[in-house]
Length: 405
Image 1 (cartoon, rainbow, N blue to C red):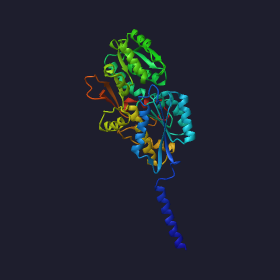
Image 2: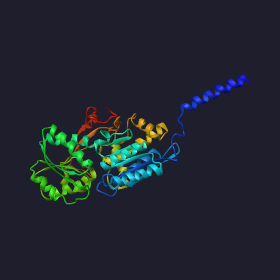
Image 3: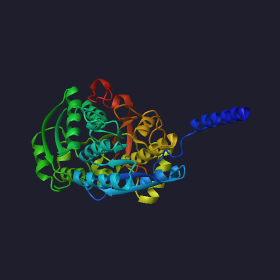
Image 4: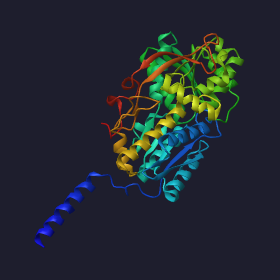
């Protein structure tokens, strides 16, 4: 009996050691892994993200295989209407009633800041895809927030410096009156002044509520600035550009859309947009991988994807890879995994997530082609310069994030 007992003990110990070396199958809670996506689906930023962002995330889930260790991956999505209260109420519902595991927020910085705070309270990962305010990874950083794709720091450092270096040293801003527009103007002004330029005036507009920009454009023209800087986006950006062309202001001032998207260029046309600088981290015609993915996206949406929509895809895929790697949807464990992994997909081959939550990858200074330079549909950009990620974003010496100091 003693010998049998010793044999049993050895077998038991071996079994325990083996089980400890294997991932615990019960670590993913519930029957599904639930991703939530809140973005502007019907408003001023709908073309830049919207339903195209929804489809991009669905593509990520499909490419991943649709499940993790037998647990189905489910996507919940809704229109936040660019309203903080709407977004927070829906996210609360998903976290409290639906058992949401992670949240992706798109297209609005004020909404992104509110969702970041809520997700931190719930201890669930929040990936802000192009909620462009750097506050998300600076003074308002949290252990659960990741800022994916560009922010106003990265786009300003590329675009503003290029314009000033070409002699555009006096600027007038037309700025969206919320966190995104304010941050974009502030960051561009820093670059402008560092290069010896100055701001001679500015005017603000409410988001999506002022289709007539005549008075603001004429105010800009009266300033005699060389550059009409557009710290806005979506349909508001299109309306400003159209108004500037209507009044001939584009002939006396150079238009600088500090942040723009390919859907906006497509809507306004190369004739009006030609020559504008922009900075982004991805373009559908960038390489073979981006072209192959964009062809699939085009089959669904009948338009080429924006950098925002590409980032939606990458963010969802990166999260799913992390959950699978550790076989857990625990927020703290997933965030640790995300911050220890190199991101490699069709968005970037060498993205990294810093302690402050900033996803860092290379940015590109581009210029909108003339109609004569464009050779085929959606052939809109020429790439002028690669901006290494370490140079594009807020540096450690500049940060106010307690997680990175």
